[in-house]
Length: 223
Image (cartoon, rainbow, N blue to C red; front, top):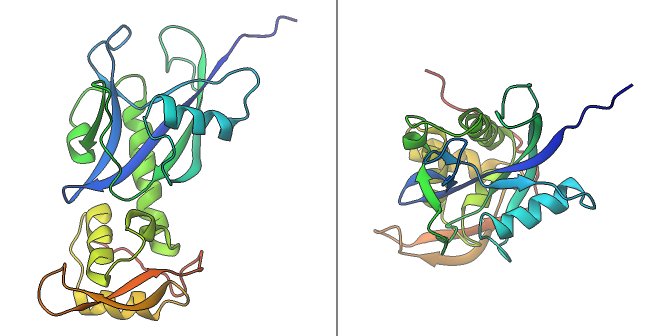
């Protein structure tokens, strides 16, 4: 029996909020296949690497985010036969989230608004992987404390609300939102400090609590 040869890659869906827009880190391809198209940063796994190690290495090498504190979790595996025209390739995608990630010094690596990327031609199946990553982030904001991963170490409720609005793509009622997030068990911890960076009266600063799951959950508005 002949054992088929299958290549294994790791692709990264790295999301942040930049200029009040949900943005993804992209790699502009400069060779075939898909010359000139955007793709997700990633690469082939090495023979002596575990998947999380490969994801961390590629986060530094291809995404240019070495020594950056970032939430990273495995997203999904993509393995249908014709996803890469060169050879049989299976990809394990990872989702990364962090606040205000820096711009890369590499010309090929760009932060792009997610809304713009969905209208452009992507390499391989990377539009599908990006869409899955965005939906994972949107869903996890409902029942986990992941929204705080988009915020600095200390933040106001208004800043947290803006994260929800940007990721979900819908406005939220400020008073109702404030009541829900401050009432969720161990989600937010008051620092005792205030800030005026939101404009207007001083606003209370909070930090992320130790809750992993939100009780009660923050449900997305349904149209």
